[in-house]
Amino acid sequence: MIHESWKPFLDAEFKKPYFQDLSKFLKEQYATKTIYPEKTAVFRAFSTDFSKISVVILGQDPYHTPGAAMGLAFSVPSSEKIPPSLINIYKEIDSDLGQLQEDLLTMNPNLSLNPEDYRHHNKTGDLSNWAEQGVLLLNNVLTVEAHLAGSHRGHGWEIFTEEVIKYLSKNRPHLVFILWGRDARNKKTLIDESKHLVLESAHPSPLSAHAGFFGSRPFSKANSFLQEHNLEQIKW
Image (cartoon, rainbow, N blue to C red; front, side, top):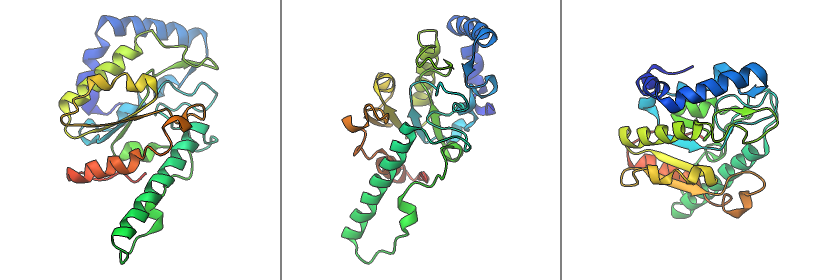
């Protein structure tokens, strides 16, 4: 599932001592416990062509319930029930883009706008279409033991994702980094804000969404930045 554009970076990381230790840990974990996502999906976020990435959404760790984790942050297979955090993400998209539509019509009442362009497009919890458009859906930690949230923290994944963020910041122009929650926001210092847009807020989880996620309007802000730099906007 890894796009060839990522292989030089990943090959270099895989050879580093921290990743060698992480690999040993993961080999033991997958052999003796139930770990999500499936081995073949751990690096699915890197199926997005590096040269086409325009938005980076950074989450925490994968869903730890059966059938949910699929290697893309916040995403679940279309056959699965939409998780509460993603429900809140969809709510914010509809609120954000709905307000954008109202603002545009206030400025120009004669505009002909399609309401369907101002709400979320996904009918399920599968965000693969975002990834295909150039959204890197990356978790801070890429694996987790079943039913034990955060169980694979502190084993090297955080170092790996720090390197990913630094590599993106250095080698891509005009990215939008969307950082939700404390783990993601801690990586803000790795990003060159002189050329990238950083949008940060509380996590969309029901436990924290009302503490700054709702009303943060990251989706219209991201598209506005992309438009300013003559880049294709995301169909959320």
